[in-house]
Amino acid sequence: MTFPGESNTIPFPSGRADGDTLGGRIWRARDALGLELSDLASRLGLPEETVSGWERDHAEPDTKALFMLAGVLSVSPSWLIAGIGEAPADPSGDEYLHPLLRQLREIHQLHDQTGKAIAALEAEVAKLIKTDQN
Image (tube, rainbow, N blue to C red; front, side):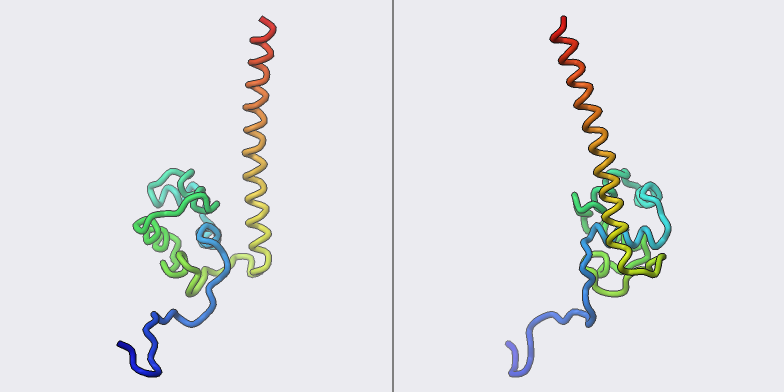
């Protein structure tokens, strides 16, 4: 039962949540510490592909991994999960530069994936041509 003037909602800490995704916050915290992806994966005892998938928002860590991440990255779980609380210091000091760096990194990853896909397709075409000529 609530009394007049009371609310039955859970209060959130004052302050705005940052607009980034979970993956973006993982990347920002790792970058602020100067860690390579392989370093973070090693500290967590997980494959690089798993952590990379989290950073690219292709998957989400389970609860245990989220708390491990928060500890390793020296951020609060609430900031990592919802962007509420204090963010890690941006090493560049320019908060507007971060989204561009993230986009550039994602484009480089897509470029690498595209190159691998093209090479695989070329190999398949070469096999088909060779089979067809026999």
